[in-house]
Image 1: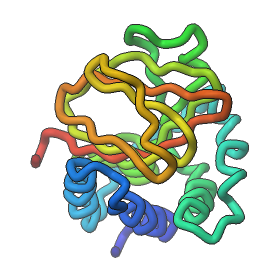
Image 2: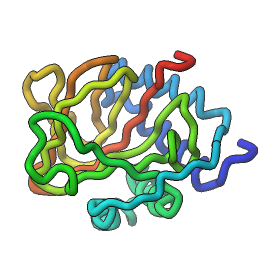
Image 3: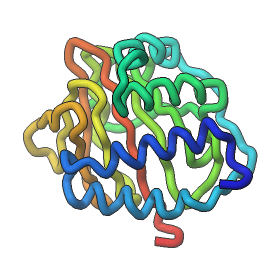
Image 4: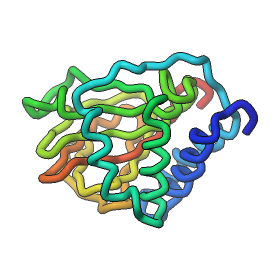
Length: 200
C-alpha cells in the first residue's frame, strides 16, 4: 500500500483477521468487510488528535497480558504499542447512565479515522480502553459498527440485558442502535470499526 506507514499497514492486516472471526455476528463481519475494503486505499490528511487523557496512562498495562503471546491478540497488542505515538485520542463526556468516573476512566484510540494515525473520514478503525468498574454511557450514532473484545466485558443494546460475547467475540451495532458497555474487575479493551454514512 503505497503512501502508508508500515506500522499502520501491519495493524490493519491483523485487525482484518480478528474481524473475520466466526465468533462475531454475521452483521459485524459484513460491516468489517466493507471497512477493510475501503482501507485498501490509503488516505491521510495529516490531522492528528494528540491530546492525551488520564486513561491513556493505563494502555501499557492493559496490553501487557497480550504482548508476549504468539496469537493475533499478541500481534495486535504489539502493533498498537508501535502506533501509540501516532494515535488520535478522544473520549466521551456526555450521555446518560455512565458511571460517576467514566470520563477520566476511558479513552478511545483512533488508528484510521479523523485525527488518527491515518486521518480519514470514510471509515474508522480504533479501540476503546476502560478502567475497571467503568460503565460507559448509553449512546447511539448514525454509523454502523462492529466490536471485537480482547478482555472480559459486557455490552447492552436497546436497553436489553447485558451480555459478554467472550474474548474474541463481539457485537454489531446497526445505525441508530442505542448501546453501552461496561468493565468488571479488570480493564476493558476492545477494538472497533465503523462505516460513515458518506460513500455507504
